[in-house]
Image 1: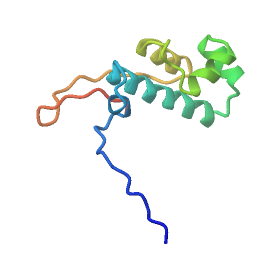
Image 2 (image 1 turned 135 degrees about the vertical axis):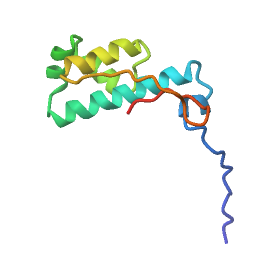
Image 3 (image 1 turned 45 degrees about the vertical axis):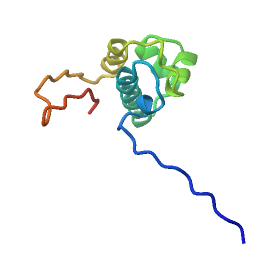
Length: 107
């Protein structure tokens, strides 16, 4: 009989970028959340990447790269502007954290 190897498990912090040791992990998590929203809107509206690129003001290869996870070169503000260009309102809400632990998140 073959013995199965037991994999070690480590609980997640809730931020995969922090778990991987990426610098500026909180910012990367916010950017990833915004890019997910952009991707969902493009799919929901059945836009081609070329059409989406025209709406948000970048070229199609950059849209493709962004949706493939290469969004390091975009600021959080620019990603929010892309959402506005796609016809969505973006709100920034500031409120007390739950039980003393504050967080950044995309809802």
